[in-house]
Length: 292
Image (cartoon, rainbow, N blue to C red; front, side, top):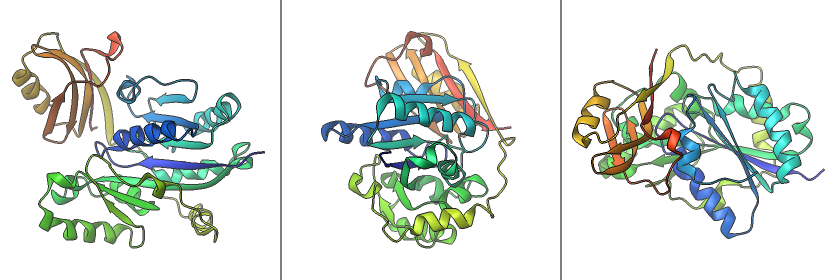
């Protein structure tokens, strides 16, 4: 059976995972590489699918939980289905913002996918602004960073350049060895995401970690679907969303100035024109993730 490398793209809420995945897909298409993508959302709406654009038979979205725990059985079933349906050259799994990449990788040891998933790696995308502001750095964030084979320090344009060494030093407290790439809009050398591992170091690391995996719960977070009326003034929309005190907001809203993608991390909420028109059923709906 043909062996296929797998990449887990992880990172806390709003770090820029979907932007990186979009780059991976565009690069693969340009080079004739077949990529099977599984995108995992903690909420139920499916906003990421619309943000990634039109997908074909090599894309599946798993919603309403995390592939590292609640949806792990669905992950294995979906990977096997994609192998049979799409015969990919590579597999990419974009986890939810509160999932653990390391626990997701452990599923690669399960039958029947253990027979065809070859080398695997975890890239963890980090929002530099989050580390600089010392927001949500315990628990899930720390576990994500400590699982990384590669760290992408993203959104460095949002912090003072002089602060970057201290930010990287903080990451080194959690993960002392993984290479760190600085990036804006997740723009990195994509050839670094599928490196060879002839010594099997990542395999040994994963095997050793099976006995030390930390218990993972999601009771601290909840996802809500907030309805927004058409034609709302943008200032009023921003004020309404900021008042929610959310960790993450994302969705599509038809404002007084036109259709907008809503993307928010903490107190920073931005409105942009969408690259493509989303399904009509998603317009006027915003996913809000908060502490439970």
